[in-house]
Image 1 (cartoon, rainbow over the protein chains, first blue to last red):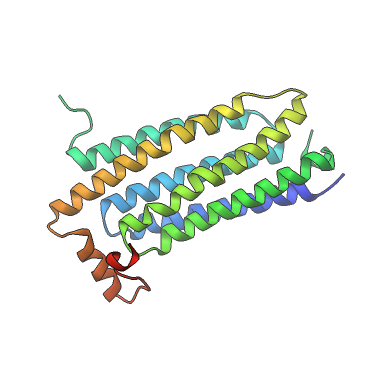
Image 2 (cartoon, helix red, strand yellow; image 1 turned 30 degrees about the horizontal axis):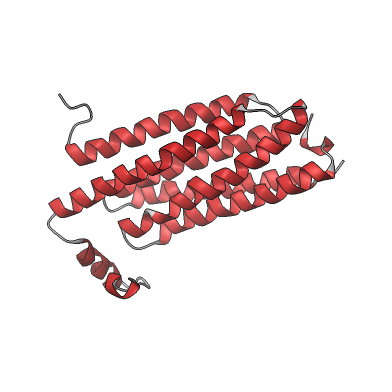
Length: 93
Length: 129
């Protein structure tokens, strides 16, 4: 009926994809290790947003479970890497 | 039901929220790429973590609630989880960055001055405070 919502979804998908490209560039270029971890954090958040936008675009609610799992595992990975940078090991005795 | 079938009172606010969220995500990515040092780079992704994520999730909450005819609560779970976990990971990353910079033997101001000498358009932290 109206084309405004598919257009907006395509625009948002393009924007999150460009943000993912920026984060990947920072991950490759980053001068220190903590820069790369921050870039990885931003990368997975933008990927989760991209999955959510695609779920809205294609009208399927399966994408929400994918987004929830991406948020969960991305958070665990970021915490593990920050802990490793801070203490030198992930699980302390 | 595809997005072409929604009525205008659903699709116009959802489209506005989607455009806002996409623009915020893009601003966060550009800021992550262009800001000069680590502690300034930490600010940029939090923009897309909080407001961009909230806008896109609110748009999908609107469309899916219309599509299913009831309030779909499992969209709110993603929002709640991201809102709970983003400050925790940001604080741990800041702590790790401070510790590693102190261990590398230079203060954060020294790196900011080094970044300023490279030609990046920045001011010293004392002036910006």
